Image (cartoon, rainbow, N blue to C red):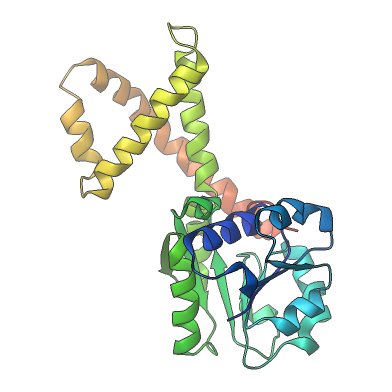
Length: 267
């Protein structure tokens, strides 16, 4: 199988590095096209066997599975450019929740996949939606490939927007929480880097407890005693967080509808 990628921004870089590190496919089975060749310099240095080009048509012609990793407003132009070169035996994958499959008008099977930059370390969730023309073999091939860089979840196209907020935008939101938690300890006996290390390790350990089956409420119950210091802190969070997170979700979904919902660098 030859994997093609058109557009090489942060999301494409993270996903490709994760795929290659996992051994899901050899570098020689990948072709990447970007109009800005300098952007691919680190890729060429790290994975010299990956074929690189600035010719989108060449990438489309040589690919069995083709990932379109450009911004929403660029998809139509890219499709107009490559449409004659697409093979009916191929599989087109939009790495973009802001463009609906019905708008692509491709004579090839089309899926959508929304990864996370955490794919680079083989974790996180990639959301997938398959168009009606995608057969079982193509579905299984794509899901198997992307499962090598984390968990995959197949959802209806209408559910992708809210899911993107949690999985693809989520690393930025979680990193911001960790950052501010660490900064609140800065100057209270700890340097920022010391506090960041402590909070990060605690976040990883807490996620491991939940991964092992513990629910958030049970963890809170195990830590917080009635009237204790943890309970006092939780009172603040329970008062402030729900409305804040509702606002975060609302503004992301509103902007998603307005701008096409690009997450992470694409190009």
